[in-house]
Length: 514
Image (cartoon, rainbow, N blue to C red; front, side, top):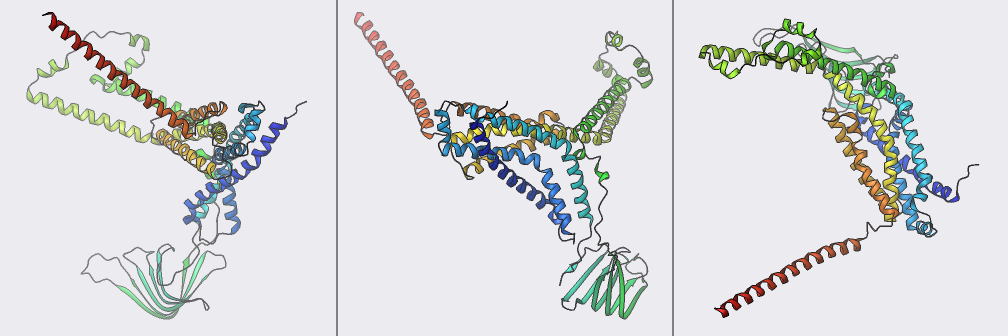
């Protein structure tokens, strides 16, 4: 029967509440970062509160894979920092328990957490991403809540600009109104002035009804072709006038199926299929173009001869030995100036044509290249974030045991610094993959590979009780270095003095013999 040890149970009970707290804090911070980026596009449009709650729910789900590594790092730092600060870690080691044995239950937990992170990103994250994209675009496309400011131009209504000098909020009356209607174009703009007016929405919330009192209107009948030409216009005066303005104030959701083709909304199997199909397409296109340009352009051979050679055995073609290898320079020097200039012009035109064809092919395949790289980034990013949970644990746990500081002060500072470093390296790796400099696998695992040696080093040092953050040990180390340097210089000086004395003694002895 499987039984868990009391020590392991104690470690798990100490770690889990801290991990839950740090996960919620990390997820909240990352969600607020996302909200801050899109706030200006979704706030102030009269959308119901439940839609915003739904947006926060989907945003929190999409931030789970990134929140887990940060929460693991901070929780492991705080847990083992508390153990060290309260001398519990010292008591465990005094009882003959190694650091690896103390970390064993949490290592198992981190492996399970990494598996959970991967499954979450494969099954739940694509659905959350698709719903979040649909909801965000729906919010962005909704017309803003009608709130005409006082003493400023309001242009959120399409094709129209409204200016209101004063507003009476009690009577809901607008005073000194100017309306510029550009729906027929700027050349045929219509201007309406009114002393006052009332604004209301129709029952179906699809139109605005603006009732104007005591005003005038001016508009042109024709486009202005020249400055001096007389242009027919219309001018009217009214006591009361109603203007109906199309203004859809309903919140219409976009169909989620429109976002199924996005790489963020695909599962790992679907991403793998896209990567394989796009890779095969790009490779075949590259080989096809290489053969085409080689047979049609290289050394001036035409397409017809190239087609005859394509049907032949490739190995036989590869083993063929050219019978004649002309010297291009000697042939060119036999031409006169007119023939040479003509030949150079033809060569330059041909090179320009080939270059234009290459550039066109690159532009034509740019969409496939972008889709291939983005799918690769998303595919390997899910593996990298899952492994990051384990890597961050092997950084946080030994680091907490070394610094021996609990609470949320020092661990939070160290965690933020390490996570920023991880995020910057990860962003650099993604940029290199998008540019085509690195393959997706190497680019997405770049940040994990950069921090893995640090985790191994800290775990080894902490298990052997090495004083990494002890300032006295570094001072003693540099003192030893400087003492060695001083001793070396002193011995070199003594050796030189002894050689000089020996030299002069021998010189004096030779003089005496003479």
